[in-house]
Length: 113
Image (tube, rainbow, N blue to C red; front, side):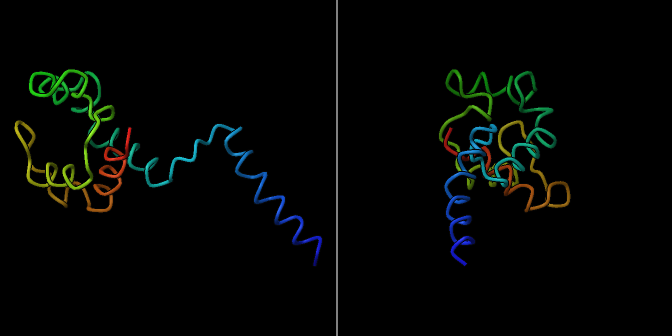
C-alpha cells in the first residue's frame, strides 16, 4: 500500500513537469478545440488575409483586426456577434454552427491573450 501511495505522489509531481517539457503549455482541451473550430469555421474570413480581417482593419484600432490576437474580446460578445451578425458579417444560425462549437470558438477567442 505504501508503494502505491509513493508512486501516486511521485506521479503527481513529475507528470505535469513532463507535460510542460514535452511542449504542452497547459492549454485546456476546450481552448484547443476552439482554436481548431475557429480556423475551420471562421478562418476563411478572419485569419490574417481574410475579408473580415481586411474590413476590421479599417474599423478597429491598429493591431486589433485579427481576432486571434485581439485583446478584450469576451465570450458573450463573440456569441452575440456571431448569432446576430455585426457590420458586414451576417448572422450565423445554429444550424450552420452548433452552440457547442460556437462556445468553443468564443472561449478560445475570449481567452486572455
